[in-house]
Length: 168
Image (tube, rainbow, N blue to C red):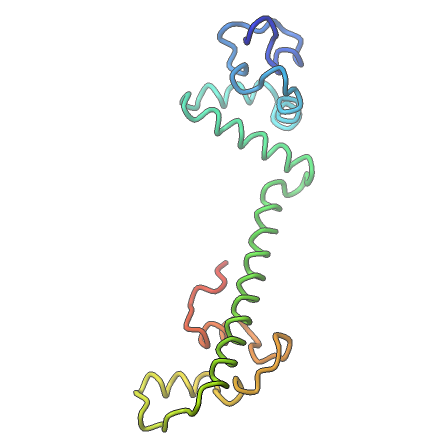
């Protein structure tokens, strides 16, 4: 209990805030919404039990996680944090694909400005394989990200030499 004011949990639960109140360090009286949302989703008794089982040095992080999860559950009762994580993973996958398209465009522009492609005899086996797998003439006709040169992530992975473009 800080001063004479009870913590947010004791104030909400209308009880006397003891010196050793497990909620007091994490739910100050000046931020009652924080406890209200956690209490609504998890219940005061469950939160108290969780905090007692966690080492003291990890409790602040646990409370922060509980507040975040409770907020996410309030916004999206079905998926909660999983919905947020899924949305962010989809954004990452889209951005990786946009990056692959941009890198492919840069590669094609760079290849268009090169003076000449050396004769096939000067390429080693890996270079020949790369050119055949990626259909180099098609790359030189690349116009825009919507021109379907890169039709799937596997093609963009092999074109750029990356094997970790999108992981699920």
